[in-house]
Image 1 (cartoon, rainbow, N blue to C red):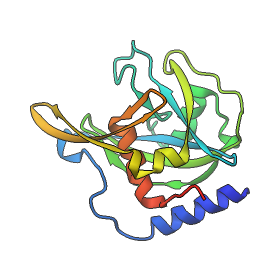
Image 2: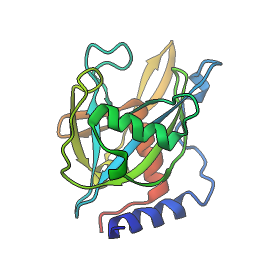
Image 3: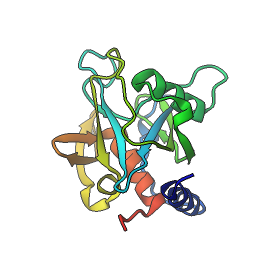
Image 4: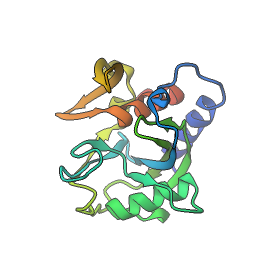
Length: 197
């Protein structure tokens, strides 16, 4: 294991060792039927670690054009870690054997009826990623320190189904990260208490 893995694992375990109030969730907007899902927060093992994010194709029925983590619904009999690794393989050709799993973080219930478990993992830098064109229009790597810095989390309010709804937006080099993805990042930021030093 690497020094970065050890550091992330220590911060992850310490951060998840206590109850945190006011973690972000859209559970109050959710329908009665909830489907389990998982995403992979893939951190690259480099001196300035990054996080792999994808742009969904504009033609997709759900969340067209949005920035997301690789992920999707759990298959029958699957756990969250298995599903996150499978989806990352299907969407970007990241081999599950390349990912050192650190742990499953706080679940996020979406207003569209998904119970999303974010799985944090470390992967080698610069491995070839091959986007599945049906699910991924493009991908990019944003600095972990930038994403986790609360100073970069813009708090905004919009309207959804006739109700005001607060959300977080993170802008990195013109990439607008918001909605579920930004909320998961904000929750993880509180757990990891990451600093770049």
